[in-house]
Image (tube, rainbow, N blue to C red):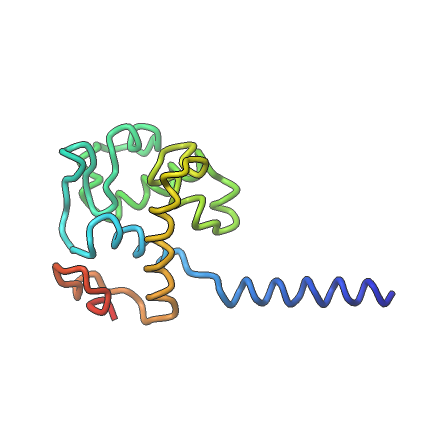
Length: 155
């Protein structure tokens, strides 16, 4: 009985610690957008025309998501967010179910097996840094974001 109490205490502390450090989906999406487009509230074409929109979605990514519409619709943040959600549900449903931001970010950056690619660790490092900087701050208002990379513009 005593060892069961210790186990339950440990699990409770572990759960509460995880809950206290967890970020929200909004913070996660903000961080990806910040890393991808420098916090600019504009539609972007990057990677020499291979990626578009605030989340820099490639045509292959969009096709794989199976979201109805046109690739050009990814220029709009709301549609692009739906594409990302569908992509993640297809390639990392467990990460989606458990808010495993690292896996999701690395797959966004490196494709379906991006979480296994060494090069995506740097991308995750950038995303997680932004997430830590904005954690717990007031809701994000994209209309207030300036064209620079100063994260304080969002606060």
